[in-house]
Length: 489
Image 1 (cartoon, rainbow, N blue to C red):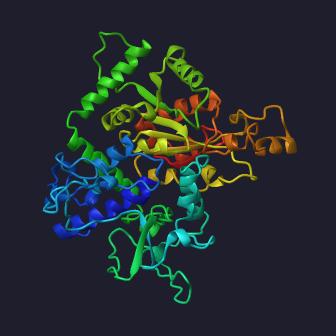
Image 2 (cartoon, rainbow, N blue to C red; image 1 turned 120 degrees about the vertical axis):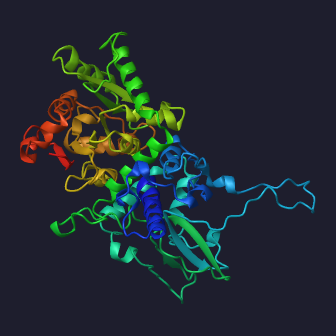
Image 3 (tube, rainbow, N blue to C red; image 1 turned 90 degrees about the vertical axis):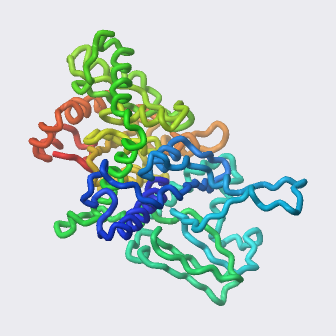
């Protein structure tokens, strides 16, 4: 959601600025100028990026730094900082003659990924009515240690994809909801990143809040015959090209580093010996995502062993490795972890965002959690269109498939059936399963068979053979629990 709400809008803003400077009507990634030959815009050196984490129990992650840090073309770009770094706590013993050297002044502050709530200047959020929507979700989540702050984002995703906040035409312009006779006199202003905000009014109070829509202005996924080449239709693809191009600028030797790390994977598994000096292109290295604290893939070691049998028994040049961003110690380590892969497999969730770092024409398999109709979360198993996570792969060069997990993926209430199964899942309390059953917290198992079949039928075939194969023939290779979101065939 950071990628779609903030970075995508920032990319739109930067594209528009670059276009204006160059006198073109096209975006950064599609300007007709080769990426490697692009001149660094002079205004880049004056930019400092900050990340505002709206929840107190969240910290700035290496993934944030890696993605936002590569939004600028220049390798000399400033490091990403936390929004809290803007605030300076003055020492009490500072003299009155202090000239304020500890503070910085910026000509302009640009806020991406927010809605703006406007209240009367005397409005006190601590005295609001219980039915006031402003800040209520943040207050509840921040004060309740048992509530995962990601669940608020998931609710926003659900609202957007279920049509409660899916009007791009309105989001293209400023929208005002003004109750001039009410006690709070609120206005809500939604803007694209490049739209001008209303000038501040002295007697009003402005509150920034994470935006209610994901990828506003770029969320329409249907590309009709008449707009196949439109900028909006290929926005996610252009954005990915832009990021990867900047990564190559920032780390000129990174391709050699990828080869070294791939070679090390093969050495560690005993698939090659120390004398091997190849470029590893004949191998397919697949990452299987793991999480430490929740949504843990319980039988991951078993699946990796079965995958490696493809080489030991069938002589396919395939190696599977665990990918856990929670164990990395730097943004560079995350880049090397993903850039060496030919494919990434994992359950729906934020850890798949780094698939954006995979090499060109790589593969992504998104495991869709099993969600019965009596709990919330059906948007994470959507098959008719990409999930809130899958949107970022739409119309990119990545081959994105989904796979619907079944009841057997849930290691709870085994042996129960029918109504007793439902009661077992929903039982609350210290001995209940309810919190462990909700999909954001749920650990899971995956049958190795469909994973191996996916690798054999989709990943191992060369890019040339896929391009020579009809999409119907490709679909026929796998069973109907697979969904083909974005495939090149």
